[in-house]
Amino acid sequence: MPNIRDLFEIEQVKDILILTPRGDVAGFLELDVHRQVQEIEKRIDSGETRHLLVDLGNSRYFGTVVIGILNSLARHVRECGGILVLSQVSEDMSQILRVMKLADTLPQFETRKTALHYLKKVEVSAIR
Image (cartoon, rainbow, N blue to C red; front, top):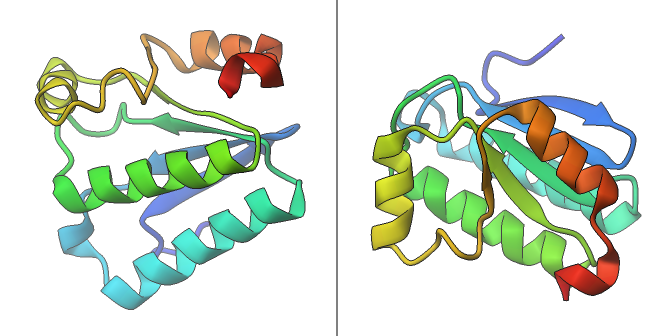
């Protein structure tokens, strides 16, 4: 059962961790957000999680704090041989990611299913 204080709903599918933001950071305590990000990083470090899929379908917009968290997690998972991808990105968010020059480093997929399919086939050599 998800903790209502958690920014992300989490689902593990094999070595892929699916994160679904439950809103923007404004509705959550900084300490709780930091704790959950640390838990996600521990899963990556342990090898339990190789890739991250972030499903943005619950909202049209996320602020710079959430984008910063995603960028940090993308860097962390890349350092461990994986990749972070986004699914169901609204046009508004896609535009923000382009302006922030993150569209190329955070691959986007129309659906969660398409993103999962991609991650199941991605080769480590293609990531690095």
